[in-house]
Amino acid sequence: MDDRLLVLNRDDDCVSVVDPETGETVEEIETDFDPITIETSPDGTKSYVTCAQGNALNVIDNETFSVTGRIEHDLLDHPSGLAVRTRANELWLVSRNNSRVFVFDIETDEVLDVIPTHQSVSNTLSLNGDESTAYITNSNGNTLTVIDCDQRRIAVDVPVGDGPEAVAVNPETNNVYVTIQRESRLTVHDPNHHDMLYKTGLGSSPIGIEFSPDATLALVPNRMSNDVSVIETRFHRDGEGRPWEVERIPVGIWPGEVVFNSSGSTAYVSNNKTNDISVIDTEAREEVDRIDVRTHPNGITYLSRD
Image (cartoon, rainbow, N blue to C red; front, side, top):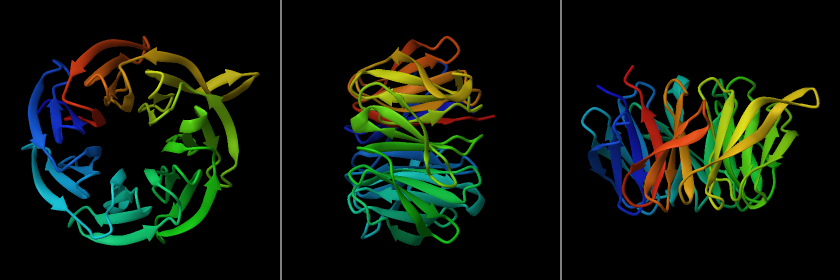
């Protein structure tokens, strides 16, 4: 089968299945209310979609493009961030409104554990390279919660700034990148002692963050300035290699999430208010096309059929 983009349309409660070569929507999948984030299982056979207002996790078959499962729990309240822990065959999920982290078995879709963060508005989630540590942003707590994945316990809460939104781990250095929404900046933290190593300004209201497959770039959608910050992870300044914003790429209104294709040559950015996807040539560092989808696209993933 050919590669596909899966785009979550929050206000239409559906997933657009897009051919990235033609920009055509080839399928639409109905979901529960307000699909917001998406992750794919390690074997690529199914995708998980958090439905924030439906308080459910939908399971999508990536061959038939149909919902084959619906996971509910009494403590799920606005499910948000997702991450797949491949070596343990686990799915980790953040329940935003009550600040809990769920651990699911991917084989059975059963809940293995529920971990309260004891913070305010736990939001997004990322794992480090060996999947031993999970990082959760707490948007109103202004902290980053660090969890030992094997023991499933909180190791530390790290103050990071006013309104942390997204977190991602550099796959080469294991440094932890956090977008600080209300300060319009990026902070980079040491994975061992959690000290802030660097910070750099971004556009207005940075939302997500995604590394290219070779980890030389990170792209950050800036919601209020309608652009994407390009971070060179090895930019040299004053003789020292450090992450730095080198330019901004104009996109649609209210960019939300970003994903790369498997080679890293192209990135796709969901634009919440123009109801389309910006196609970015990462070498030229410019928007080269727009793909129309449905209303309020946000979560997005790339299914490679290699």
